[in-house]
Image 1 (cartoon, rainbow, N blue to C red):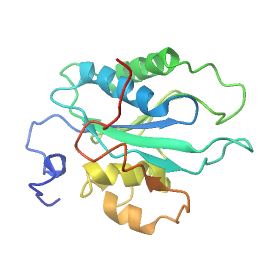
Image 2: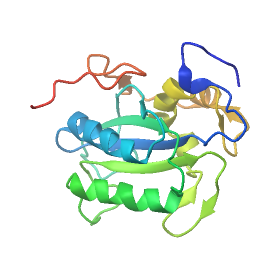
Image 3: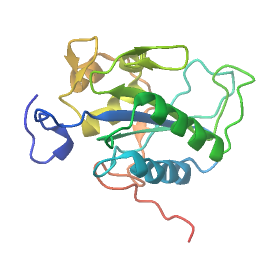
Length: 196
């Protein structure tokens, strides 16, 4: 991994340093950007240091019911607080989804106001009914990998032997995938006018 002084999250991790936790955000119902901002702020409670935010992108729904609205996607990354585990973070992200108005699934991949997926926790591995780490399909999803490239371009995607930017280069195009540059810039909290 190369050191990039313009990208503070793309550094080589020092020995003993907490790993990067990567969480993907998705939404295709309601005020997605406002919900993303609330979720990122809530995740600060679990972070040691800042929660880094990617740009926000729009994307084609994948494996969703016909007629599903376009998705809005982003990725956040942070160092976890001491004592936090993937399992405890999962419970908290599920609670955040419910607070945002997500209801139990009636149809697979139906529209939702907030979807939080735990993508990776350093080199941690899990193979549980509720949690698989690293996320088994993240490397196949442009809407995860391209936002992640804003934050960790040189990070090796577990199980691929490739960096994030290399994975992005091998993904099929999505003609509707594009950054919402008027709303976001990498490494800066989403530039959105929120209600007071």
